[in-house]
Amino acid sequence: MSPTENLRYMSYESIINLFEGKKVRVVWNEQKEKYYFSVVDIVQVLTGSTNPRRYWSDLKRKLSAEGSELYAKIVQQKMPSSDGKKYLTDVADLEQTLCLIQSVPSPKADPLKLWLAEVGAQRIDQMIDPELTFQMAVEDYRRQGERVAA
Image 1: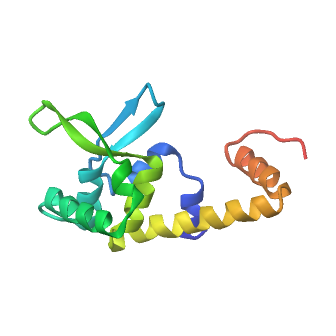
Image 2: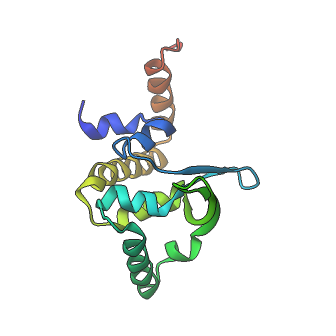
């Protein structure tokens, strides 16, 4: 199985572990029923920058100048800091996080970018041939150890 095939079957926790076990702060927003990820943490993991806040500040300017909707969709949530206090932090939901990963030039992001491309291609295939959606669901159940009548 190729690395991108392994990524295809990842759980939410596994996606977070793609960040090489480094701490990425995540908060659940009950009102919107979404997870939000700390943008600075993601930037730090992807770039290895010693000053991820500065990198994110520069990237925000670049995205804004390009007219990217990503920057406009970033919101702030209170998240715990290294001193234990909670501060407003730029956060992105899962969709925005995946867009952010695509915007950061980093070899660490390449496996995720390949996975996104594969998932996108599979979804297009499923839209063309809806039978593929059923076949994928059967495969997923079998992989999880569920019995499926053939």
